[in-house]
Image (cartoon, rainbow, N blue to C red; front, side):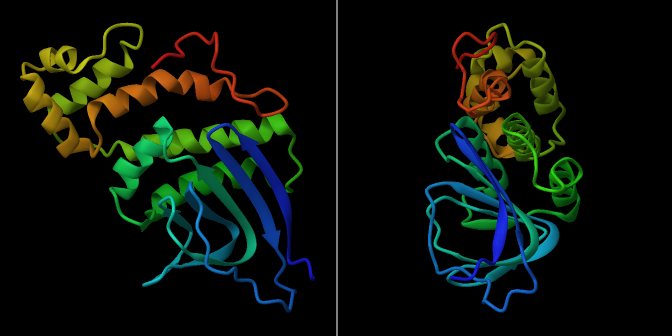
Amino acid sequence: MARIARGNIFVWEGGALWAFEVSPKSSTRKITDFHAHHAIQVTLALDGEFRIHLSDRVLAGPAVVISADIAHAFEAEGSIAILFIEPETAAGLLITGGILRDRTAAVLSEDNAVALTTVIRDQARGLNLGDRDWNRLGQQLIGSFIDQAVHPSADARILEILRWARTNMDGRLGISDAARQVGLSSNRMSHLFVEETGLPFRTFVLWLRLAPCYQSANDRTGRYRGGGVKGCRA
């Protein structure tokens, strides 16, 4: 069988990052069979191009997000990176509710795609990084997606709640506590938060609580080390 790509695969609990080069000189057709993963797939064109074939349409880069368990075929050439994220993790829930908004797939805006591909292009060029570097890159990419998942809100009350939550990580972050910050009932605040950000408030708080755990996962084997990390609680 002809080899048509070379690259690195790095795995940690809850995610994986693949970066590879598909040779343009290969005469082998560079498209996979239709398949599905129980993971959110984020495909990024570094110095290459790709197409995602779905059952009803074809999506092209520079960055495409596919929901978990969606059948697709993948066609690529040049330098490509793929980030896989388990849908049940806090990051996965945020991406599903915030970026995908329950759609099967989505193409990221040019600005968002450039921000994400730059993270890898500038730091992973050459595909010769060590385990700690790949883990750091993966977590950095997930963090970039989380920032995009919480869509900017024009409502001053939600902006105040977001600011309050991020600066009170060690305190109570319940719905009633958030509602009191802006003089709303818990029920009204909960609905308004979803309308403005696309995410339930509890899911947003879960990510804030778990973010230190994701960032601490940088040992040599890439194994998740949540226990004992300050701030690592749900």
